[in-house]
Every structure is written in C-alpha cells, then in structure tokens.
Image 1 (cartoon, one colour):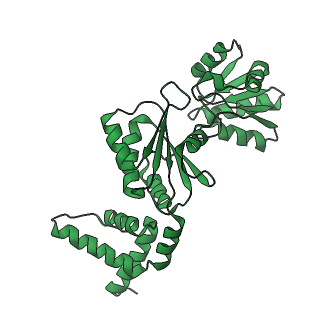
Image 2 (tube, rainbow, N blue to C red):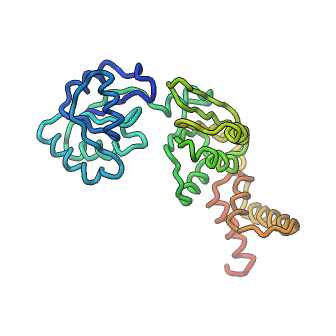
Image 3 (cartoon, one colour):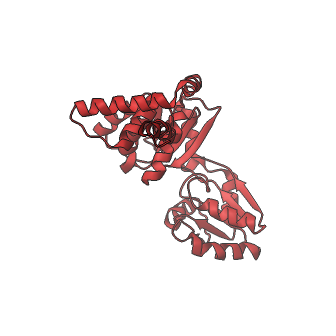
Length: 290
C-alpha cells in the first residue's frame, strides 16, 4: 500500500500519532529530500530505508516504487513539509499508483495554504489554490487574466527571493484588494501581515523577505464584476485604448500595445485576452478589414 503521510510544516509537535505509526511500520519512506526527512525520523527515533523521489528524478524513480508496491511492500510518501501532492511531485506517484490499481491511503495533517487561508481574515467559503505561479511569462499572464475577474479567495505560494517581484505583479493586477502575506507558519517567527500589495511592497523593501511565504488574495467583488462585465463593450475598450495611447504620446512615452491592453483590462476589470479581442474587433472594422 502507498501511504501519503503529511508531516509538519515547521513545528515538529504538529505530527500526528498515526503518522508516526505509519512511518515506524512501513517498509520504505519515499522522500522529496532524504536529508530533510532523515532529520525528522531521527528526532522520533525511527529507522527506515529512505529513497529519494523529487521533481528531477520522478520519471526514473516511479517504476521502481510502483514495482515495490506491486510486490506487496508498504511505502510512506512524504514531502519536505506539509501534505504530499500539494505543489510537489508526490501527486504524480499517487496517480501512478491509482492507475496501477494499488491501494492508496492518507494520513492527514498540516497544509500551509489552508492554515494561511484561515489566518488571513478573508472569506473561506469559496477559494482557489494556485500553488507557485512561477516565472514563466505566459503562465504568469494566464494567472493575471484569471485573477482580474476571480471572485473567490486565491491562495499562492512564493519563495522569498521572488516575493517583491510577485507583489509588484499583484499590485498591477489586483490593485487595492486585500492580501494576507503569511510567512514561517507554525515556526518561531510566524508572521501574518494584512494589507494591500502596495503596503506589503513598502514593508518588504525595508525588511528583507525571509522564510517560506503563502499569499492569500481577496477575490474581486462579485456584484461589481458582474455589473462591469455586463456594460463593457468592444467600443469602450477601443476608446479606452486610444485614450491611454494618446495620453502616453502627449507625455512623450511610446508604450507597447500589449502594455496598454493590460491597463485597459485592469480598468474594466476584465481578462487581458478578452480586452485584446474586443479591441481588435473594432480595430479591424476601423481599418476596413471586415
């Protein structure tokens, strides 16, 4: 059987008795970082064979683990911290096991994203988890297009060296919506800061970001987004584009079309791709292409 075992995200006291029992009695522990997991096992005087399973070796390692599971061995899957399968390669092993007809059980425990959501003070009845939004420009733009109109609370993870860049990115796309920045959850220096992206930028410019971060972002107002979506026309978008473009030229600025479209989308609270399509609809008509 494959046991998916949640481990502490910082405070070792958060591990459950059942998690310890599974780690004690399994045949192998598959760990994202064997060195990190060895410290956890040693703390609780557990001695078990460890095998690494992480993003860059999962393709090669997966058949071996599936073979062991098929042969009747019990494997405990752990991540560096929290619940395996959430923004880590554990999800691929779980899928491979279920596809192979192998029984999978889970020992629940800490999840940083859920803890941050609860502490954020933002609505918890409906939310969406986006994990790490990464550095790929296309994926970040897709995220920007989504979050402009997203009415649910949004949870993302971020590394300290990318925090300021992501806050600047959010400032452009969610404006004054509330954001809870949670760091070092369950640890000695746990901190939850609540404010706007602009306020957080000031704080973390003055205070170097340290630790692991979870950002919880307020959704856009449902009534506002519906009203705006209902009244915005392609002509509105086209006129706004020309207004911004003309204003920029008057200031001696030559801006890229894509940047202006992004500003238009934000002003109407609609996705960037939608704004682009609406602009082109009128632009083609004006040029006589339709």
